[in-house]
Image (cartoon, rainbow, N blue to C red):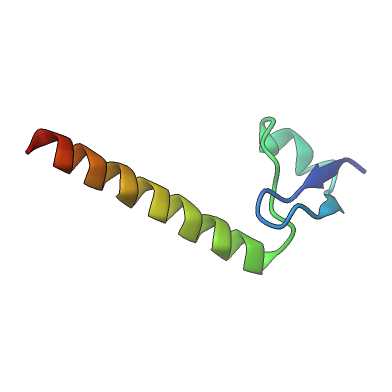
Length: 58
């Protein structure tokens, strides 16, 4: 089984051989809690970028 490293908590975890090709080189989260936290982090990063762009236009 391929081993991935969770981008949120850094835990090494196995994934199925079927799931591995669909990762396209990205590291998959280890569980639902980390998946939720990753979504929150991405959302915060996008909102911060939007705020910077809005401030730059003013």
